[in-house]
Image (cartoon, rainbow, N blue to C red):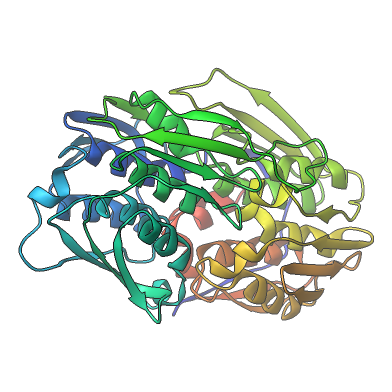
Length: 455
């Protein structure tokens, strides 16, 4: 396990195009494989997680040709994916269960069963690394079983996950927690199920799957969900209905830069005196940019420039500046799912904000690459933060900043990058153990951070 040290530094100046969006890349490879013609993907993320998805669809029979580095998309490659059709996996399945290695890719582990579950005659076993084996899959297994799928997990909830294809029946399913991965899994299953499949989310979650399916010719009916969640003027959750289709028709999918990856540079600029950083070409899908609203409420200097949508996905640039002192905030309700991957950064911001920053309703964090509530709290405590875990979030008593120390990434890519930003904003520096985990989503993160620092 490699360690990397990040000492106090700054200011950060300049512009950065983050690597391609991880969530959209996963979905593009899966939807491309589900089609029955070739699909071009421009700017697919070239990282460990998304490589696992390429490998998985190849095992299922899809042809994936790598066309080379993507022009204008650092960290991206262009792909041509020859799909096997919606009902193709069963045709390529051998007599015994086919093994699929998902690596560390939780998105792949939770989305792919939706497609496989509706393939009578096929059987698959999805497994991955030690981290994956600690990440529950019961939240997709249970509704898939209600649709008629045969799905087995260890102790009913953990990988390896065995999926045997069966004829599916559409259901109406109200998700207990907002989760784009669970929603996406059930919508993919609904493409193969008899009747209607309806997914009701209690709060908004990222909608990349819906946008991509619509672009592929699928008719999705959606309406605001009537839920008891207090959204305080933010986006409502949705009720999404899909019916079975015969084919998907999507020939081109560009991938924007990843807002979640760019968020680390934005937060570093907010925290380090004299900094000004612009991240360009990032996706500005409203279901992904909850952090911007949180930063605004904290008093951070943020400016957004919107460009033209590409392939149904809004994109543009975001500039962050160091400025006035930050003010603590409360984050909860519908805001949580709009910033789920950036909540560790909210904890870091809370260390420097005056007052008590409280995040609640974030149980989903316990099912990420690590238990992100526990690992964020323990990691920031180790470098001087006054932070405590709660059952569904954390409480940060801020104003004092961070001294420094050693932060364990717990094998989680976002914790590794969090430690780096904490180090340059701290008084004494931070040693990040297991920093190599950053390569799961952002292999060039350290080099990009050093470039903004003029190193």
